[in-house]
Amino acid sequence: DAKTTQPTSMDCAEGRAANLPCNHSTISGNEYVYWYRQIHSQGPQYIIHGLKNNETNEMASLIITEDRKSSTLILPHATLRDTAVYYCIVRVWKAAGNKLTFGGGTRVLVKP
Amino acid sequence: GAGVSQSPSNKVTEKGKDVELRCDPISGHTALYWYRQSLGQGLEFLIYFQGNSAPDKSGLPSDRFSAERTGGSVSTLTIQRTQQEDSAVYLCASSSPQEPREQYFGPGTRLTVT
Image (cartoon, rainbow over all chains, first blue to last red; front, side, top):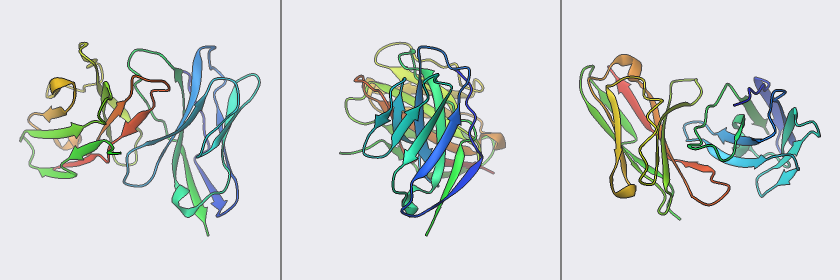
């Protein structure tokens, strides 16, 4: 799996959009970008994933650059409950056994 | 609907004792994963079950660790002769055979070996 690089931490004002960057310059053509988050004392939670097109669901939007070497997760209206560690993962979608390996992630603190 | 459940939520055991951790996946999910997460660390894959196939045990750290999945549903992770370095949160996840096959995690079992 390609390596990802994320900022260690980020603060965000409640009600504002939170833009979380992720660099994955060694991504290969069949690798997808996945985002998970982990709220304190809870198990990880899937957010969104994409290959090359921008994606949006009820939780967030995912913007992937044209060269696919970086992406941005957007939480459109951050709430206090969005305070969590956010993990960007790059992996082949249909690999046998989708083992997840989380690095350090970005610790997001949403402030009132 | 019901999510992934794990029990116990917390377990304190003495060094050298055996422990069993249980995972109930989401009904209909054919894939089941065990991970562990040490304090402040990322996620470490342990073992993966997919249907009736042989499990992928490549992440188990030693032969003291084993897991089984009965009837394609409930899974038990067993740690024999526990050591202090086994202290961690043990997370179970399951995923549907349908795309996008995202993994749904349980709340975890916090294991403390004294």
